[in-house]
Image (spheres, one colour):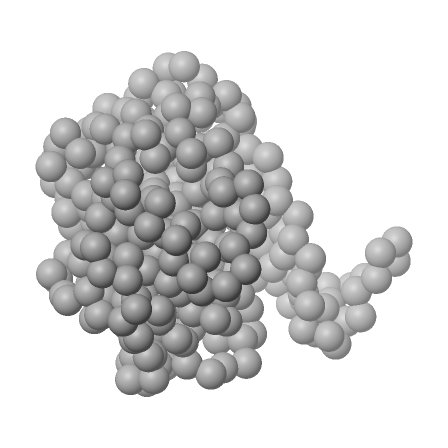
Length: 309
């Protein structure tokens, strides 16, 4: 089993409009509500790939009820803790005329000290039953910057692999606990470095800096350029299929899902990367985050190029 941790869960609400403009009144032509937060997106894709997954984290109010019930309906186990208030709503306004989107990320409930201790106990329990525990996304208000680092140490002590996918202070502090896997994107890595790498050699040097801290699997996602990865000391450039993406929200989460799912099967490094990039590409062809068409995923697997560096 794989466990995902979403401390800042959300309802992802996508509103479709014609010719979106600031300061104007629009009639919504279509609306889609999805259980969201990065960890929940990871859980959805793991399940679609055929894996067994349990989602934990923090939910609140009626929005939290929707998040949990929607995951359960998809065959995903749930073990959330309950908070006061209501889970946040994140809006994605899609302009059908230009295929552009505008995101508004809501703010969730403030996490209490008691809830911090409760989630530690919950993660410890689930880690003993899991091959991997995936910690994804931003920390909610009230959560200490050290929380991911503390959870990583708990996961490692339980004998599971700790995956970390976050940015900013949470990322830099989390590294101190030596997770098994990290996946910064271009922006997150540039923020950590203090500058943006200019070419592949500089991306590889940055990845090596992370690997040298004892991290077994370092994957830097580069959008349409694919990913650069160091897995167990070996460096790879991964080229994705050539596609015209419908939606890029959740592609990084699908990548993480692919790595965790293939890792649980003990696939080779190249096979894990192929699965991860194909899942990300399939997500890009869906209008929903954390959603893949399995037939499309299988087609893309054959088109992914793995280049050892």
